Image (cartoon, rainbow, N blue to C red; front, top):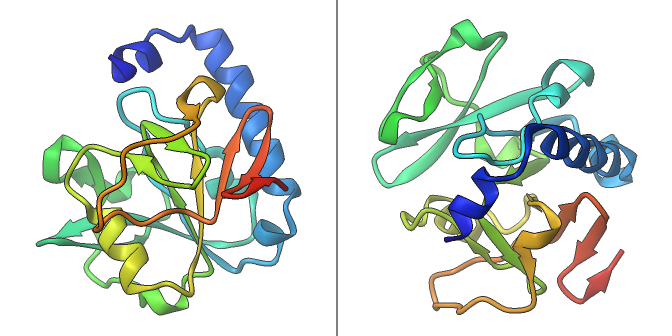
Amino acid sequence: MMLARRQAISQEDKRLFEASIIHHIVSMPFFQQADVIALYVPVRGEVDLLSLWHSSNKVVLFPKVCGDELAFYPAVCMDDFEKGCFGILEPSCADAFDVGKVDMIIVPGLVFDRGGYRLGYGKGYYDRLMKDHPGIRTLGVCFDEFYIERLPVDPWDANVELVVTQTGVFRSEGEV
């Protein structure tokens, strides 16, 4: 139901919302001080942040499913991608970046709650990544209507530090 609602957002509204989200992100000292960030290639109506890729002087990485884990790889242009797991575009280069050297991971999700927990697509890749690398700053992004009070949380779920919507930047305990 939530996926259908997200995909029903008009392209005009989506572009406006994404522009606001991007403005919030680039205004954050958290982002400005990062040298290496991990983005994602949007699918199924996810927030499109690809304009951050070439508009910043940062090393930008993208996820690739490797067994039960996510690894991150640099990419220069969309020609550096191929369809990977689940039909999602993944970098095609061979050498993974050391995840421990990533400053910030922007985490996709269908829904985020006030505690920073997310509803993804059920495979737990980002949950395992965040639990395995607790020192990396994490930022979730979604549209306002998908930022809710509370999701059911399982012991294996991990939360992001901040959630950004078109109306603001939020910590799990309240607005930043």
